Amino acid sequence: MKIISVIGARPQFIKLKPIVDELKKRKINHILVHTGQHYDYEMSKIFFDELNVPKPDYNLEVGSYSHAKQTALMLERIEKVLLKEKPNTVIVYGDTNSTLAGALGAVKLNIPVAHIEAGLRSYKSDMPEEVNRVLTDHISKFLFCPTKTAVDNLKKEGITKGVHLVGDVMYDIFKSKINSEFNSGPKPKTLQKLNLKSKEYFLLTIHRQENTDNPENLRSILFALKQIKKKIVFPMHPRTRKTLKQLNSEFSLLKGTVTTIGNFLIMNPVSYLDMLVLEKNAKKILTDSGGVQKEAYWLSIPCITLRKETEWMETVKNGWNILVGTDVDSIIRAIRGMNVDFSTRQFYGKGNAATKIVDTLAVVSSI
Image (cartoon, rainbow, N blue to C red; front, side, top):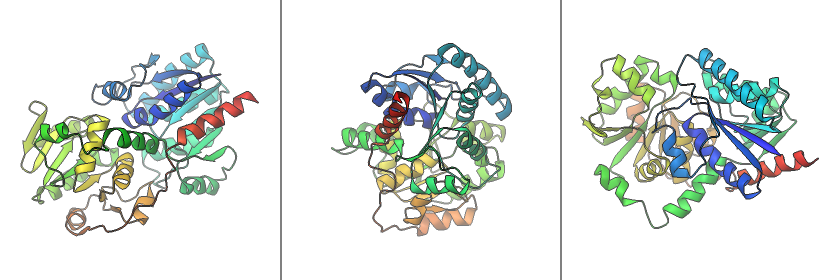
C-alpha cells in the first residue's frame, strides 16, 4: 500500500502530523509532496522541524501567484509525481489551492482521493477556500468529516457514500501537545521573551484573503484595535504585511524580530507550540483563522472572529466565539462586552481521528 499526502500551507503541516505518525506506526509506505504554497521558513520549515515531520519527498516549489496560475502549476507538477509513484490513495487536507490541485491531479488519473476535513461550509461562494473545499468534496472517494455538522452539510449536497465521521485531526495533535508540553504550565520562555504576562494581552491573527486583500477591512480592524488600551500581540502573516506595505502603513515595518507600535506588539509568524502558548495565556483572541477559532475553544479562551461567517459554528453556538466581521463598532463592543461563563462541549472527537482515518484506508486497501 502506498499513500501520497499533498500539503502546502501551515494548517496542513499541523493536520499532517498525526496522520504521519499513524502511517509510520503501521509501516505503510507514505510519500509527502509539498507544493511550496507557503515557502518561507516561518510558514513552512519551522513546522516540520518542531513537529518532527519527515522532510518532504518532493518539494514542488510553486510559490505565490494568482489563484489560477498557482493551482495550474501545482496540478502540472503533482501529475508528474503521481505518474511516477503510482499511489493507491492521495490524501489532501483542508481547503487550500494545494488541496484542490492534489485532488484534481489524482482523480484525473483515477487515483482515489481522501479528503481530511471534508464537509466544512461557510456558504460564501466568493471565498476561495469555499470553492476549493466544495470541489474537492465532490470528487473525493473518502470524505473524513471532523463534525456531525460537516456530515449534514454533505448530505444536503447529495453526498452520503464514503462519508466518515472521524473527529478533527487538529484536536489529535492539540490534545497530544497540551498533555505533553503544558501540564506543568505554560512554557515561560515564550512569554518572558516577549515580556508578556498571562491574561494581560489580546492575541490577533489576520490571514484570510477577504481581509488581507481588502484595504478597507484591514484598516477597520487595526483602527478598532488602536482604540483598545490592552496590549495587542500580533504575529503577522506575510500576506498581511505585503498589503500593509502597499498601503505605506507603519504596521508593515518590522525592526528585528519584534516591533512595538502603539499598543501593538508585532512579530513574524511563530511556531505551532509558541502559538499555543500565546493562545493559552491571552485574555481574548481576535482572528479570521478557522484553526485558531478551534484552539481558542479547546483552551476556553473567548474568541472574536473577524468574519461574518465561520465553518466552525459549534464554537459560536456554545458561546465561546462571536462573529463581528470588520465593523469598527462591532469589534470594540465585542472586546469590551464579551464575558464568557460557559463550559465547553467536545464536538471534535476524542483525539483519535488519525487512527480512524488510517483504519478506513487500510481496510479498503486490503479488500
